[in-house]
Image (tube, rainbow, N blue to C red):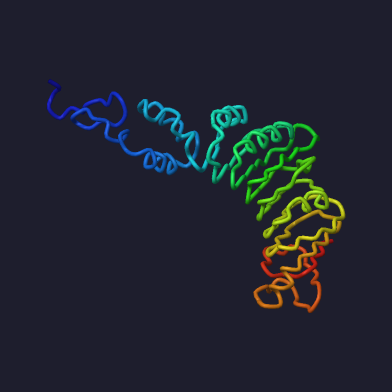
Length: 264
């Protein structure tokens, strides 16, 4: 008999005084909710040592966030996921200097899982001057790419048919080639981007953010914004006109700006 007041060492999972692992006996939905509250895939995966029931349970999470792990480990983790119900969120932070080819590989692995919302970011200079090849994410509703001074190459075929929100930060981009592949786009964010002259038509665009960009010239024809401007006086960052409105440099957020935006 153990000395009075001593603590019993758990052997498998979180067992109570009678040796029953009650935590592992909870429904899988509750266990996944517990894992989701841990914040990152790394923390969730560590619970696999608790008990047999927890092993690989993290692969059923609807939202996956990677922080503080290398790209090799990220790809290995993504490879463990089976193609089933689509992910609600895949958020990847690249913590090391990588080549654009490595980022392309990560995006390709992500595309196989069809996340509704995909974010990939990193603030290290690229190890090469090649381009990130965007896969056709036909199920993604939201896409954010924030990769320091990397160039983006649009998919050779297909469209982003479900994409309603696109955010591109610190990238080199051919907007005239990419944006026509996003017919349902409603929110567009371009920050610290580099690109050439572009003229595009975005019939459903409702919100535009242009900030600190190095774009030679961009004309975005967005009749939905013009219609909203006529109905709502919510944009105080630019002057209102009956026709197209010029967008001043450094505009932070303009949910009802104009039918044609020009940034020089």
